[in-house]
Image (cartoon, rainbow, N blue to C red):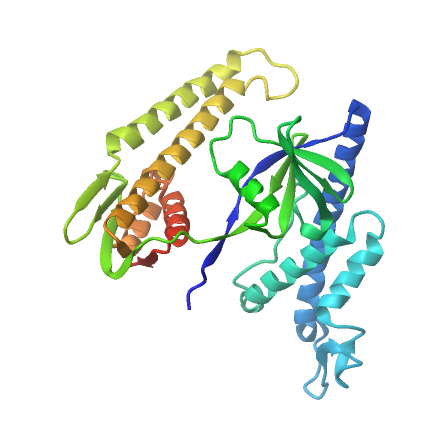
Length: 365
């Protein structure tokens, strides 16, 4: 039986909801401390998990030595003082006791343990290296760390406390579904799952995960829509009775190349611009065009994939097949121009997400 729910992640800016500048700075410093400890704890945890998994190779034990990576109290061959997941938690909790909330450590432990188990065969074969977490990593927490989530009419923002720290949302001129999702969370119509906090350039970003029900449309599994992705026409989709060409080379590629050319001119001109305070001032114009290109491509891909899914719904197509994609991936990898400008992976990601949301089965040929 297919799951009737799916998970969505959104990015929402947060502000510290305290009256004075000193209090807000103190709260932000505390968040940066939690981020630092979480990044260090994550590297400790994944290292200990790897050592436990590879202990036989590391110690060059003889064949006669019998052992199990298990709790010695539960198995006579066990060599640990607790379960694997408990031992890695105890290592970091003892090291960072009082420096960050235990809720963050608990969620970090669970996510790392599950991801390590998924990839451990590749680690053993040498096909994958261990994850290396960076200082600016987002740290996780769940709803137990949140309290008193309400919508404040005076502040025009959603307010809640994160481990007793008052925060409020800043949605700005938002035309997406963030406000609707948060309203449904307060009403109890949507479940809020484990989330992350990301700190960047002194700003706080909340990455909440919402579990929502899939949209219910009258789709027929035996009605098949076939789609192809290419640079000439980003998406071409057809059923037995209809066909639709979405986007064009002129609309997508030429506009993108024009932005890239403007960025190139700004890069050459940066040599003669006024400096000071590092490279940020000299490369300001270039960064503006890079943001413009990224936003343009993201918008176009959202529009194209939305039209694709609307076409499938309109013709009751319960199955969507993407044709000849493996061959096109190989061509794109061998041609730098295609790889740089096609945005194939973004198209694929958004098609998968939107198809799942409305209950369309996606098949990649």
